[in-house]
Amino acid sequence: MLCRQRIGVREGTPGMTTDEMPADITEDTVTDAVVASFAGTADPRLRECLSVLTRHLHAAVRELEPTLAEWDAALAFLTATGQKCDATRQEFVLLSDVLGVSALVENLNHRTSAGATEATVLGPFHLTESPRRELGDTIDELGHGESCVVTGHVRSVDGTPLTGATVDVWQATEDGFYDVQQPGVQPPGNGRGLFTTDDEGRFWFRTVVPAHYPIPVDGPVGTLLAGTGRGPYRPAHVHFIAAAEGHTPVTTHIFVAGSPYLDADAVFAVKRSLVREFAPVDDAAAAERYGVVNPFRHADVDLVLEAG
Amino acid sequence: MLCRQRIGVREGTPGMTTDEMPADITEDTVTDAVVASFAGTADPRLRECLSVLTRHLHAAVRELEPTLAEWDAALAFLTATGQKCDATRQEFVLLSDVLGVSALVENLNHRTSAGATEATVLGPFHLTESPRRELGDTIDELGHGESCVVTGHVRSVDGTPLTGATVDVWQATEDGFYDVQQPGVQPPGNGRGLFTTDDEGRFWFRTVVPAHYPIPVDGPVGTLLAGTGRGPYRPAHVHFIAAAEGHTPVTTHIFVAGSPYLDADAVFAVKRSLVREFAPVDDAAAAERYGVVNPFRHADVDLVLEAG
Image (tube, rainbow over all chains, first blue to last red; front, top):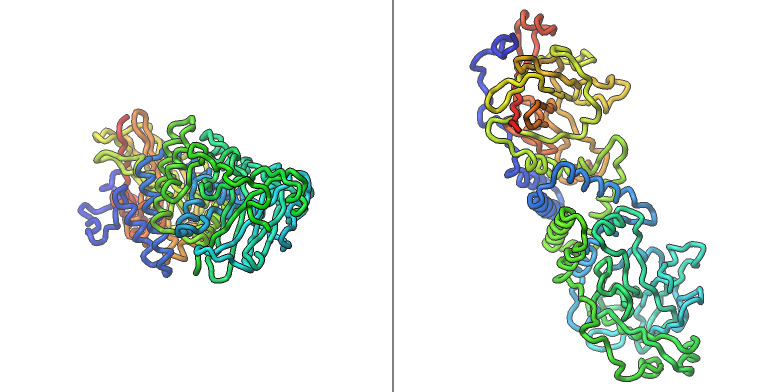
């Protein structure tokens, strides 16, 4: 006989009192229990972040009621995303990008006032320091693409030209690749330049018109895009960071008007105010002045910074 | 002179018409734009999951307004979590556990009716098939700990004993380690057993009283726990999966009453209904009957399954 009474457990052994009972973790109590577990966090901002993330994550899980297999698949996806990262590949940033979170964080951090150049995402290719170049230099060291001149000013919102402002530029080639993606094909620093505005706040340089290009799709993010019928392309653009003393720097893109994918940027970075014509120009005298072959393309880009 | 007019761009070059303008991605439009990007997802459940997760993730980001540095730190944490995973370590499951998400998913998937044994998390240690053992066998192949007898029935909610039900058991040692954590110290299968109930629905086996133990803290989850002042401990417990024909299987733990950390389980798995006395017994005849030394400990565990 194996029942409880027969092996010496006294009848009426008192159970635990209510005071001794542990908290009951149920679907109704678990979220508050997790948030309460962060009560001892020394850093109040960390505590706030973990509490808010926990509440929203739990809310998503309650809304979806994933099966155990679905939740396992989600964790396996995140694991694979982490394992795809290495010194030159950041798949979690890419995931943040394609879910529009990078764009949202950028927008929340750069609420510019009217008239200032809008910010957009830094992107993953600002890996190296741009070579310092003189105004009028070319950033294209390959010489394959269609000649292009970019001109512009850095100004304060009140219109004042900003002398001695820095303009950091980086872009893909006419084939859609950054230098760091083609070691051995492109010299380091190709498509990049760090310029300083002249005494009228002007900058100008030579380049090629960049092409639209796909984000890397050989990892979990590529699988996600394929599974959702989304394309991997970004519309053609040139990256800029403009900075001047006494002003808030801006990190932004200038998009090439008419580029494919302006309405379907894989990373949700397009703003109307950042689209510029890269206009065809047929002007032999201007071409000679800039040191490009005629005809050429021209984009004019004013970068307007907020004071403070 | 470098202004736009001087290099041949015609005055009045028409800009894009409104129809040609791309969508403007701002903090107000980005969430809807991301959700809309999933419109082409072939699998409607995947589309729902991604849409809901995107909305909640964006809501958390809007509430927190992380700096770019904070968001980078979050992505670096997730990257490190993925990179800590290998064949025997699943740090993302551990992260899900300490954020209470595993417990929530388990609860949502196993809403048992009154009278049925409540489910709790599977945990990471059900890695190997438990060795089939005979009723009354010991699952403790080391012989160090305090003798313990576990007895019980598998029943249907209406009270009917379930003959031929399987009871899969796994637990840590009295030192708080599973066999898979101590290769070379514990033989494979130590602390594990797969039993079949007799013709009265009964099961019984010998073991040792398991100890509370810490989850692994040498990875990013350990850093998170340390940073939040949380302990890594789980209260002492024995894992069970009970299954019987015509019934829904249950995956659960039985917690040792009086164990430390019943109120602070690092993975939020404790339910009051799953706490059992592992009572001291001084009964030489019973000890002889079970093949244990007197005195010993005894826990009685009825596992009650829902039909269907």
